[in-house]
Length: 145
Image 1: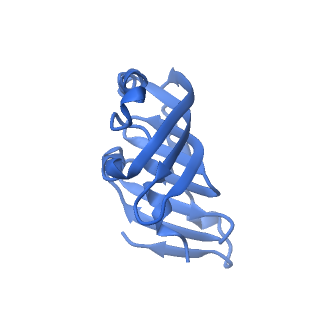
Image 2: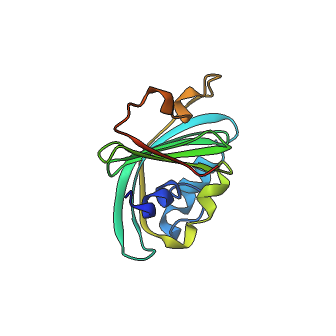
Image 3: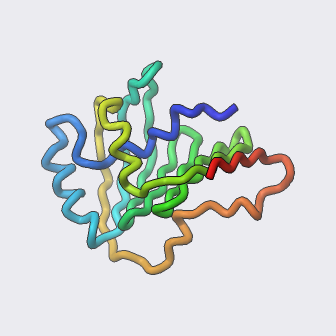
């Protein structure tokens, strides 16, 4: 079964990080309403058993996509798809866009952000959705909506 602790992987960005990162976080947050933001993250998720997480996070408006530790998480602002390609599992859940990130703020430590890039917002938001119709019968899709 998919490791459910990876859903909080999304809690990597908002201004809730360690004080050394506050200025960088504030700069990133100032672009949330106007740009597509891509960055590399490295942190420790400490709920239950500590887990070191690394990957890439892309945010636009209330949408985000996180890739790291062999997992992919897509959020189009209303639905979240947590995808484990190795195990061929997908969990589909209702989501609240960037509000999902706030739920795990107390569980992040040692947050490091790098490679922050800003680009113009794009009209095409398909990169923030996961199409389960393209999956074959070997995949397990759990729809909790």
